[in-house]
Image (cartoon, rainbow, N blue to C red):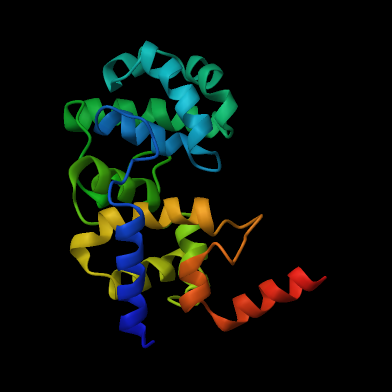
Length: 219
């Protein structure tokens, strides 16, 4: 297969496996999505989805959120980890959304990145999933699979995002990045990986990755 044929194979396989694509983090609007994505940093979606209902029952908009103290927010979100930084970020960005944007979440990666505790990946998720603006957020699953599939050199997520945007058509970015995440979790995880079930990597994967896999299996 040449590079384009491999890209087409990935798209066709993922569309067949995930014709309907659930969004991993529970939310009801751009603000609750922003908070949920912020909380998911170095945590799991499952854990975040258990905590956000408790937080959003008290405050599901920036106006109610700023009525809470940073410490009160921290107490609720402790189980997701990094609670000191995240609670300050949530409180601070809620103030900015009210003061600068009338309580609305801006529809711009650049403006979102100016908010406390909001990085490029978080901003990309929000614009893609809340506003339908093409973006390609790169999480650990996408970074790992793009390397395993020999689509990027694996040096950093910035390069992985550039390579993904170059290889895949813009109009499918929003669906595709979610499809890759689900596929990575189910068939190509970092730990407990079974290459025999990972049809995409087995078909188009980087030779060194596959060779290393079988070396470990022999030990």
